[in-house]
Image 1: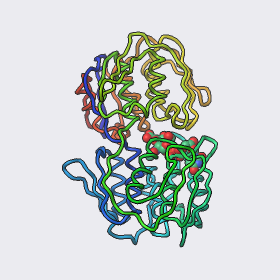
Image 2: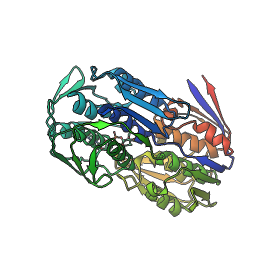
Image 3: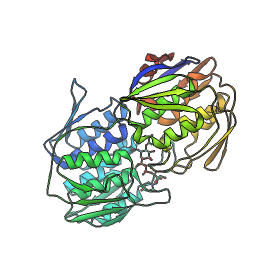
Image 4: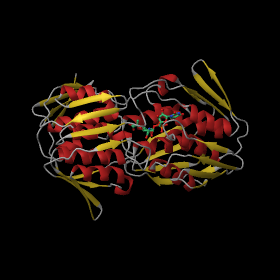
Length: 421
Ligand code: EPU
């Protein structure tokens, strides 16, 4: 198992290119199940989660090949298997987004219930509600959810839950509705840029989706979808993580392939902390001031502050000049990084879905354990500035969602060694 040894204290400086968005690519790959012909995806990051989705799709009869130019070529070759097995689903929750496409195209989907995960409960009741509203029957068989629908029909679907809308639930319903008869209206749809990207891909394949990026998405069903060539959006969470890397090391990073318009809530909080974020032609330049102001952050669905950057900002606010407050409104238990950051000298106190952060003058290197993707990013960020050496174990969590993160950071001045246990 790989781990990182990080010698902290280096200022990061220079250009870094943001990779394509993992959370945009995963549902788009699943959507290829709906199509006849070839899909060619460009800007796909080389990540464990993408390879995992490719494996799942291969089992479902889709050939997936990565070409030398980095593009991913997908083509449905065999439509007989409709079963996403537990062994694959439990390793990557995003596997559930094959459900809508399988149901719409093959009239049946059998998908293992994903179960719990390190960031808390992850129910899929809203996915099921949406798909049954389109006419599917559902039953639970041996831990698998089996959905059947001879003929899906458009309907009105409300996807608001106790924690807001659902990103992959919206993706599932949107994908299924593309081949349903008639018109579907999704109310309280998630508005994340990754869903706009999914809808743009589907429309490029011949779907008729409007309103994507707003809480009301309308899908007019069509008879079939063809393949297309499509470039995915840059990863806003990787970009935000790199912004924190510049801020926490008092450095200056020039981010290429960065959509600042997808990061307005994040940029707003960085500026409130005292970090400068400016556009410079097609780059975004992030420069840190010496003093970090304490702030409050509440995570919210897009366009609010993303839960996927909560842990990284907590590392940064550990060094602010005063007390900050972070409240998690999407996954109220997503705090496994708190105890690990405290091992490095941070002063974080959890009270329900809120963490109070008392700013300290410095963090100190320590052996720490990554628990999930974004928590591991937070620990690497803390390691970049900690005094001495930090050992981050279980970096396979990081490798799921950050493409060659250690190499990217080393290229701008970090000192990270990847070693194997
Ligand atoms: N929820 C329900 N019922 C459902 C589905 C969700 O109550 O049927 C609740 C969840 O428990 C949560 C909230 O709704 O409280 C939002 O969950 P959502 O369904 O939107 O999460 P997701 O679609 O499973 C995606 C991202 C996550 C990201 C969340 C929130 C992908 C592959 N995953 O998950 O990304 O945190 O949206 O923005 O797109 C990550 O990349 O590290 C990651 C975890």
